[in-house]
Length: 335
Image (cartoon, rainbow, N blue to C red; front, top):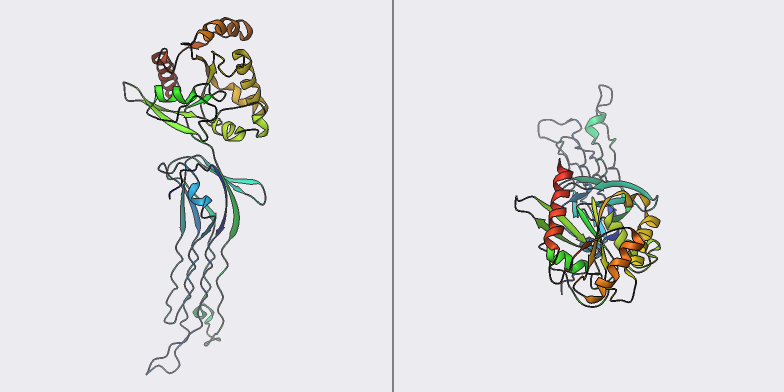
């Protein structure tokens, strides 16, 4: 049965191919009794290559196949025949994946653009055949070299979603409903927390055919900057977003105070990475169709000094206004 599990961090062991050995050989033909050396070189080992692919959205395939090997180089042969080069192991990964050397804790590459590649482990060079040692005073050399071993590395891959807009909010704030309302995505929606267990991206298409991507991130709870709950699964995926939308449950259906939710959301983001709060953002008061929301909105404005955009993702009130704001943001960024 095929798994739909979302994996955004995985450790893989990569093995580049060894180079083939050079050959020690001499010509043996009927009328040439003293033929010279004709040992061919070994082929180069294949490399392990990561390639960004827009059709890949998770690291799930590597989760179930954590050992990746490239092909070995073929050995050289007589008649100066070169060994076959080993086949590269090309691994498709999502755009926005960081490649880390797990042993040293060093980031090796940040693969963002579609088709971008990074060689994680290089194949070994092929050995030299004995024909390279022939000189006027050394007519019958037997020297040859073995191929070099391919590199072996332990690689940590971290996916950070690439999106234009990141939806920020507590569980059950209505982020998934909002994403459904503004985009082509269809995330699960239910009246209980943590229905979103992995990031979901939707595309918003405007009348002039311009578009932007919106990411619904797993709900944030207090202590997320320390990894509490789905903390890092939330916070890591807003790092690349250009624009943040704070979605606040203005009705307080989970018995929390909306203005405290907003303050705590900003606090968690600041504790994780302060510069994320420098992004342009929009504060949205969701669930304004409920009576409690109308009572809480005045308190929210008074306590935070922010007049949020009032919407209801359920009834679609205010959705057109959000689309207009996102469209303007999209155009401003492209100019």
